[in-house]
Length: 94
Image 1 (cartoon, rainbow, N blue to C red):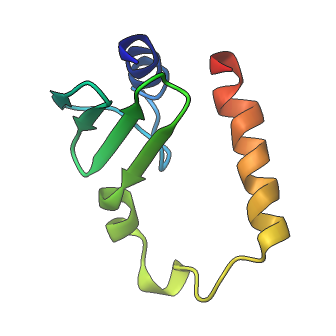
Image 2 (tube, rainbow, N blue to C red):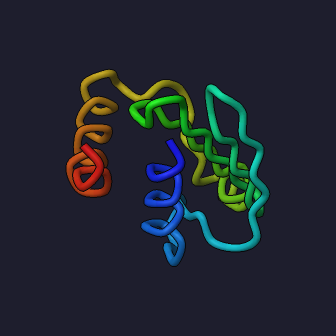
Image 3 (spheres, helix red, strand yellow):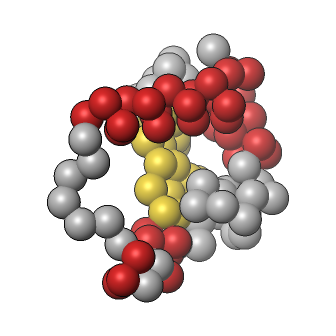
């Protein structure tokens, strides 16, 4: 769990995209997960490192209202985007 957290923090540390782990961080650790709180974002890595959650509320707040999505993304497009992200960004971890 700690190794996965360190890998993710390092991998996205210098990113200027929506997924970033740059800046100052605070950690909260228990037996089930590690919470990492950054500047506008948070990351949770669960027990064995196979389940991760990430949110970047700071990035979402900077998107102009005219550019924000309205309605649902079609399931097939959402799946394609998820698979592309996994293949490009997370492949080294699985």
